[in-house]
Length: 84
Image (cartoon, rainbow, N blue to C red; front, side, top):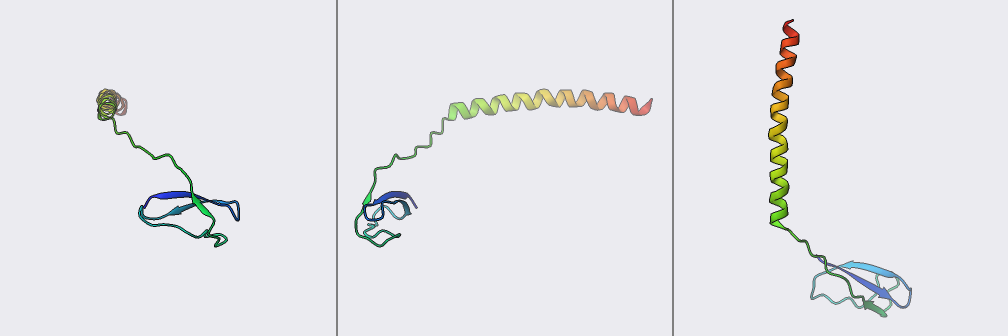
């Protein structure tokens, strides 16, 4: 459910109310006055840049592969030390 900001002139409070887009709020939930006004709010836009996501995935994959090789070498060294 979207959230909307309201301002009550009677109690001078700013209130956030969750409700459906078609619902109309006529009373302040704090003081029950009918002097409540809906405030303008900035919509939230989630930008899912697929190119950036795939680039991060590629870098992560390369890092994992590079570390696999390092871990293999460290494991071999540890096994050699255990046999000595």
